[in-house]
Image (cartoon, rainbow, N blue to C red; front, top):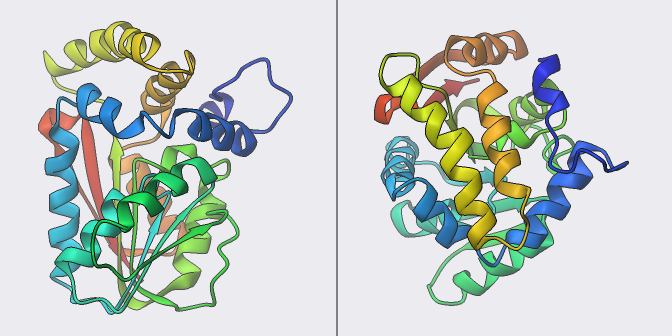
Length: 243
């Protein structure tokens, strides 16, 4: 876990990782959705649909989407489940302002809350389902964040993570490396206001524990029935666990 903590957006900054991540997402919030589609070649939409289906099948009444960003997943839960309480939580007010604008366009029951994933402002056993989509590698203290998620998840509730991972098989491993180190930062620098943001997103993905390594961390925290499902040759992985 030490290598993951060394990767921060602004290497010369005196701010901690949490403060830097908040600043970075505030800066890129307006362009984030469009760039995501370009960078993932649209496949992130397909991955999110799988997460929505997994959660909807459990018929949750309360859902928490952590690192909700611009609210895509939370708003889709409003349209695809019967949940009476859906909360999207994020550190970045810039991202949440985009999410709230989107929410005006649909009938929904989503509440967007500014908050810290490592100090969740909710009581124990509050949610039937909790999700984190492309946000868990931005936690400053991964185990503390996961412990908080376990705390607020109800017994028998479902926890789903969608996160980038690194392919292990030839030629996808080599292709991913070229794309992540060479192409993705270039796309980010051309289209983004923040030249280092997409370099950070690429670097943090490359060192973040994935597959069985993350499964083992989830088990260590206390999650049970932990499974992982690699997506699109392993460039992303969906993790499912319960309490």
